[in-house]
Image (tube, rainbow, N blue to C red):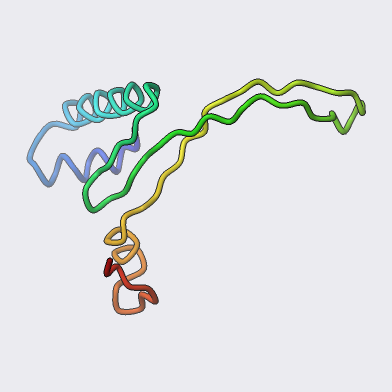
Amino acid sequence: MNNLFVQKIAEKIFLDDELINEMLKIFFYEMTKILKSDKKISLHDFGVFSVKLHKSYTTINPSTLKNMDVESYFKTYFKPSCKLLQDINYSSICHFSCES
């Protein structure tokens, strides 16, 4: 885990770095399990994580010019919340509205 990230969290909530690191490992492990079960994860004011299945297909290998099969796979997507986008882009210069 990013050491600076862990340290910043530990400072804010007055806990040991190792405990924060372990909590984050558990958090990301659980996120991975949920995404593997083909579900979405929505974190309020942060964004939505989701996975989509890409079907298998046949393509041409550009080096050998032979057909090759690409197996189906899951791809992870993240859609940031409007609040996160505004926070990143500093709302004073934000050129979009989050009004629904």
